[in-house]
Image (tube, rainbow, N blue to C red):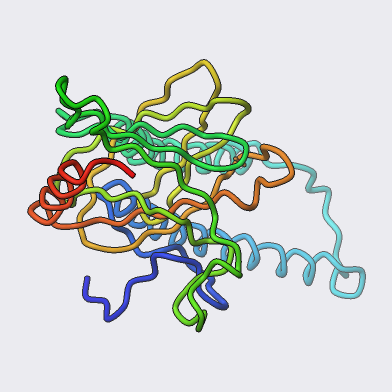
Length: 255
Ligand code: CUA
């Protein structure tokens, strides 16, 4: 993979998926390509059959008629071949599904809480017993147009948040997702993640970010009038810079 720019946010006239930033999303993209290849072959084959049927069985072209009604052998073939194709597809599909569900020893846990209509985050690994106010907690609201810097260049309307979630790259992360009021859904397309935030229920996700970037996502579960206005922004930093960020953040204390 060699991109000049990565597509980590929606782009104009975008027809394909975002650029992958996690192993899970890479797997999804590869599987998607294989599926598309198969789908194209099937569509061409069925289209060819259909057009020939329409042509040869029309009134004008059907001068000789037979007593041909049905063919048992043919029916067996066209029932079992699609079933076999589905069976062949199920193996990579389930492998990917369960591989994405697998939780590796996480080094960091990010707690994500959905609210009407914003997200709040917490990383509790660095909490100290002595200084209770020192923790990585933040609440992320969408930035309204007036809140964006003067020349609005380079900012995404309805996608920017006042604070961004900062996570390290090349680290096994655990995301714990829940909600405080109604159902929400935490979604970042570049990570290939989408999980419901249910009140009274804790959902767990596994994330391994492969590269540095700014990733955009949105709530994906209808949660009320401002459902479209609770975006997600994740910044990934190299591990060393992330540690530096944590140290400065905790030493200065939370504002
Ligand atoms: Cu929160 Cu939709």
